[in-house]
Length: 238
Length: 259
Image 1 (cartoon, one colour):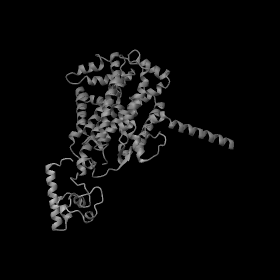
Image 2 (tube, each protein chain N blue to C red):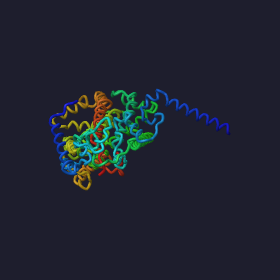
Image 3 (tube, rainbow over the protein chains, first blue to last red):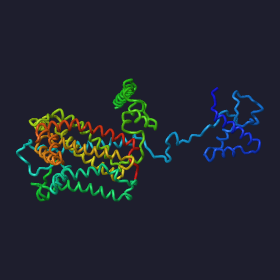
Image 4 (spheres, each protein chain N blue to C red):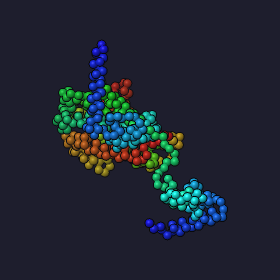
């Protein structure tokens, strides 16, 4: 038989004595049990099983037939040593989350999206050819010379600022702010009505680049001078 | 007529039997793990729906279940997934293009010309590569805007936003390095404008430009350098960042909740 630690044995003895006193003195072992639990939310029935009765129940004393004679109130021979609450071992969510299976709900949507984009790209490629101008020639500078469309905002800035400011400082600061956004924006709420300032700032930022790209793409002609596409035609290749 | 029907039925039966035999074979069962929708006796029930993900390679990407709102197309607009899919499409079409392209100033343009005129499907694959590239820049940009407007970069997803901005820059670099490769007037002068701008980096501007061009001006060395960046180095870095990006999406508790 395994040795029972000293403090546990003492505690068990105390409990046994207490239970005996309760049985002898009054008729409320359950009440005794719940007060012993000191406000823990443990069902009274469970605690009751933990307090072994010194006197076996009436029926058991008369006919000791079973092979394992329990010493508990209902003939049980196991005891409640401790109650481990669910939160301490495993992370239980207090509010259930409404979830769906990835198959088929998400995979079907993804598959459809992939097919649609493939179809779109294929069809577009059948009807519109990618540009291939004449071979690169260092002696023939096209007028205007334009960067790829996503850099046309920067090229547009070049007309207003010193190249270092337009090409490095402004986009550098823009990118830095973009990367740092989660650390700058300390507002915990995700609701649009709580973050009007952040939404405004981002919209201005996005609009700033979009408008610059539009101007650079469609409103700049020879010499990178301002033109209207409906008067002078388009100077834009993708 | 009746005879015809009988023949058809027999054929159908035979086909069905063959299908059953194939699906019952050891080879088939070894390819499709339990729970696969292609496995014999698949039935649609919650347990099998879980197995479809759990027992397939998709488990690297998707959990078994996601929040219900996460599959609403109106919430995510599929933009992140589309960006990734365009990346795959670009890889596939790009590999095709690599078979017909040599990155030297003397051959590059001729190779593209030959690809368009003499190679089967050459023109359409090149078109797809180009349009998908522009689309990817657009979809990555829109993905970023969508994430911002949903406040999805807030804790615990701050670092995934940082990785996302890196991926945006990698996308732009991928597109820009690819821009030079056809070696036509458009490519040469667009890249000239772009790299001149980088030359104005403070302190070591001319060095930055020298490293990028592989010389003092654009030439064959630049073409080789940008080719290697475009087909190998930048995709490699992008794939690593993508892996971290997707992994963090799950570790941070799936996509952000409804507003």
